Length: 112
Image (cartoon, rainbow, N blue to C red; front, side):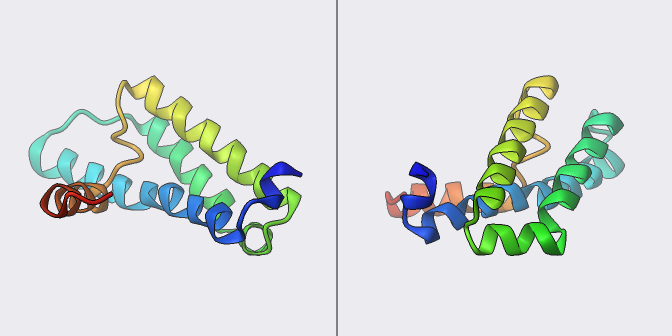
C-alpha cells in the first residue's frame, strides 16, 4: 500500500501524537482537581479506550512492524482523536504539557 511504502520511521512516528493523550489526560485531571477546570468523563473514557487499543501487545507489534493492521489501527485512532477534540471544542484530551514544551522550544529555536 501507499502508506506501507513510506519510510517506516515516519509511519511509526504517528504513535507519539496518540501517546500524548496519556499526558493530556493526566494534565486535564490535575487541572480539574486543582483549578476546577471543566471536564468531561465521557471524552476521558473514550480517550482511555483509544490508549488501551494502542498499547495492547498485539497492536504495539503491528504498529512496530508497520503492518496493514497497524496502519489501519493508527488511522482509526487518529479519526477517534480528532472526533474527541471536535466534541470537546479543542485539543484538551490530546495535547498535554509535552506539546507546550515542544511549542516553546520551537519558538525559542525557530525550528520545527
